[in-house]
Length: 324
Image: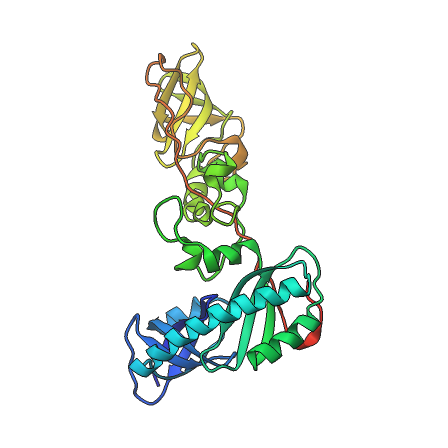
């Protein structure tokens, strides 16, 4: 029985889904699937080989592909989108009527109509029990209130990033692990928050993409401040140019030059090779701050992208009272 990785829902959930009998599906094909939430429309990403299945998120839930989406399903999906727009406005009005301290982000009705999921932001604990009762009457189905974070808001609403491409969280990212400022420092990214923050206002997720590469290369370089010996004699390491594998050094004569790391004959004092460094001490992939009139000096060339990710808000079942 063939199995496929299927993405479904507005939060772009991933799961391994089995197909009926010998049914085959291609990448990008829309399917109607039975998920843990009910009947939903999803998109086939690839066949779920053993290797692919082992790379799935830990919280991924599977299900059953019922059929490929037909022309009738496409018509129903368009009607569903129109219905969700109306329900979004209804929910917004109900929240205002109950004066609840929450920001409505999106309303999702499952294809099978089993439930409506309301996504919202709130800094404080919200007692939405009365709201749920009213919405159940309005929508004539089960209502689930799900609190989300600012990153999830961007995942639902954001379009394009500074790079000109669709935001990563709304395209290929299924998990969003934390990203720290030290990742930006190591890659010599500008530390101006307005330039390294994404649509969610947090550090850009793409800062994590090359961080491990920078860190691995840095382990083989003498650390900033180390005393080294080269063919020019003794010198001090002023900065690292990690991707280039180069060092900005100052000789005993006070001359600043950029050399290749292979030119280092000996590292005096604390060796850096093979040992992690404090990322805050080093430069990144850009050139070091050598004076323009120094022989061999090179100008600055900073350039990295980045981001930080927060945790998703946990689901709060609608029938269980207040959520925080």
